[in-house]
Length: 281
Image 1 (tube, helix red, strand yellow):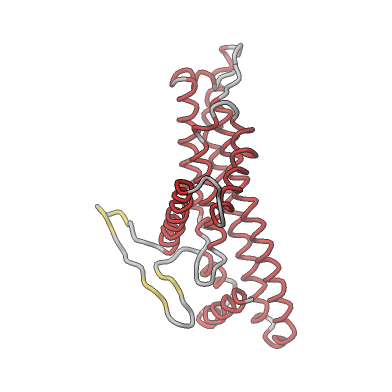
Image 2 (spheres, rainbow, N blue to C red; image 1 turned 180 degrees about the vertical axis):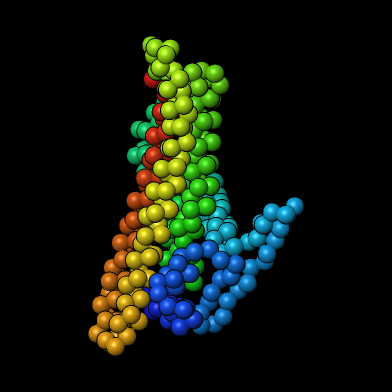
């Protein structure tokens, strides 16, 4: 309820300043060079450039750093607690459940032999996607995985991990040779080779778009439902309870979506790495 009320306050101010239409929804979900703390004001972020390239710190970059910092601090203390006692307690016990789930239900059955080498990477991806999504539900924060640049960066890192995993297990030439099915007629290589190269890039592209679309969709729906209060301002007292009620429902649904997307992103990454590591010949 607090989240819905504070989001409504922010939307009210944005709508009043807006020129009309649905452009205010995009203003709420898009990246910017300031962080709004309506009605208390806003924080301007620095504009930076290097050799003519814009490297300014934006809202989504800032919150990406916050999410990464939280993960580093929390997981550091979780790891440190194991040095004191092998029996987990409290927060450590909670994280152990998640770590065992990712290991036994995602990475191990999907990658198979040699999964231990890739487990830290998949745990990092899972925790970052999960925390980034949940952190976006906090008032005045932002869902960084609703930015296609962030999801593209995550997908790019996964792409590199897939290629390095395949090369590590099969050798440089063996990995790329294994992309071509054995017994393929030579005259088909002209078609198959470009398709296989294209296939290498479609995998991270699918990861990028899937995560981006699902994260941004939930926030657009929430803002649209809240916006009904102002669209039907003549019946505000009748529409407001329905809009806020549906928004709270979408908030709860959004938590489920965040959990599912963290699972799917990690699982698909593990699947692609497993396909690269254990090639069919």
